[in-house]
Length: 256
Figure (tube, rainbow, N blue to C red):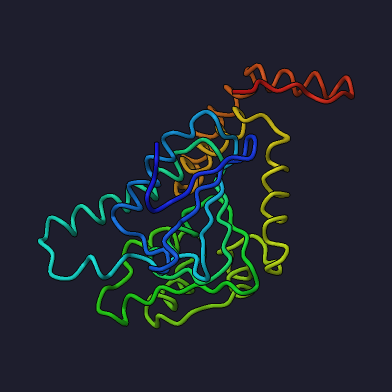
């Protein structure tokens, strides 16, 4: 299926979705978010890792304000419903999703980074939730942002709109690694290849379990996770992993 505002490429089991509206600072228009959702739906089960990247100097400037002026209330309802669907789809996808952030990520662009499972940033990247400056508080971006960096730091970004640089984002837990611009592609591929060593089925199972328990209290989290782990132990790939470890040989995982 052809896309107008994104590009989808694959390098073996690594699929990449590239935001491709550099002339609009990769603003997340309603059309672009719909295209990303469609692309994510097409990736199961072909890809084992998904990378989200962008063209041009900016990763994403957030929602496209030019399409948000003077619209009917139904448009805003649809826009933020689709945005929410997209962010939840990133968590529901069984594959790990890595944000490759080379430049500025603001508002819903920052939300997109926070909603990905992992993120690697260039030293040139920066992050902000500046909606308060234009009278539109970043209410949906704060959902994944708060869960990733914590309340105080999220509120600082939300109340001031001030950007943080890549190294601050690393310190706060918004990204996993900061590298030079020249090393960004290699760093993302290295992380993806590390994940690819393991059973895709088990990684997907673990990702679902992670998001199911992460916001539960400790007792409920243990209750849910113990059920998952018991079922996982009986899985063919776990049994293969046990046998390979005991025999001191490489495991042979079930592949899609």
